[in-house]
View 1 (tube, one colour):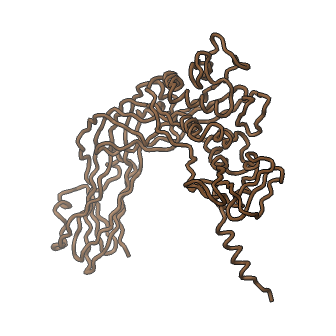
View 2: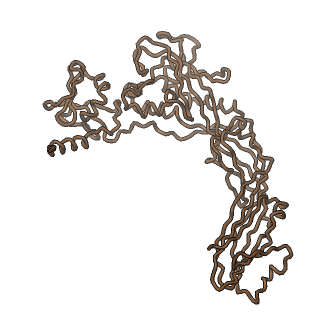
View 3: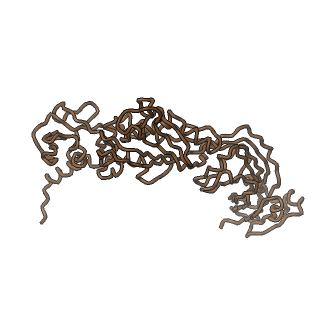
Length: 493
């Protein structure tokens, strides 16, 4: 018989439940307190042995050779001289602590707009925004360890920067005019911005004053269902018809030629005119200027109950109307940013922390998806995983520059920017109303309703005990612009 030590099992379960194995521990948030055994500053808690084991390399890098520091309970971690041994020990007045609620995320700064114009105008306005664009990127490069991210006429990062057009790129670099002092001070770090892309954002839509015609009734399709039995019967009425829109739009600037639709979207509805305009994904916004008819098949259905020995009128009204107004969509801007310069000897955030001042070129992508190597948020959010820091040691940068400085640099560099695409929109639309069910009335002497006897363009069909008379004519509707019309009436068994 297998015997189970229930005491040991309970201890093991409690041990697992009490550990932080599922917690994300960012090494840059760990602090070293000397307030007594298992005592941390307000808002912090002792690091447990499992968390310390996971972040052992980061902890040893900040410990003295023979240093011994307490962990949660009676556990300690011992310095490099002890090979980072983690064991139970006597009380220790020093403790590694971690915040109860770490606030280490990259902030999401509100989007900034760039005035509408040509594509070159939009790029110029963006890269020359020294406060919201140049300064955060400069601080990001500086905090990562790039040397000389500033000009000769200023002692501050991101100031006295020259901004020049180079081919399809923009180069931001400290001014080298005049004299400078310092090791290789003439080798200013370059910040190159290129690979611009623009996508229309249909969530941000604006329109001006609307000019809209009244709905014009084009045709009323009707039917009368007569129940000649002594039992109420349910019928299903289906009407399929193509709703169409003849539309066009203008674009105020040539910038729209560079704007793409990232996802399929429908033109927003404004006023009472029903539109059927759809933009496919990865399509040029300026090339989608209409000038032709777009259509979409709709199916209208009703399931009325026809009382015994009664007739029930059914109708659908088909309309035509027109609309025009000025429009504007946001156009989200994305781009690549390359830092290229030598890394400072006194400390840099490259994962190997080289001390021979090597040149390092690295590209980040802003505003769109990218590989992990170019994704700031991915690297930042996964810095708690040992071995995942394959490019920049963000924890080191946070400890050296300070969390607030790094949050400003990363959040500001990732701030979304958008410009606009605008113009005038025009549309003529043909569309169907809803299926309307009238009041049932008794069948008198098996005579047809007054409206039925007045029409010569009717057809009558018997479906079981139900007789249906209608003026539906697919060819007539096609001539009126309503293609693909079908009408079906069936009886529910």
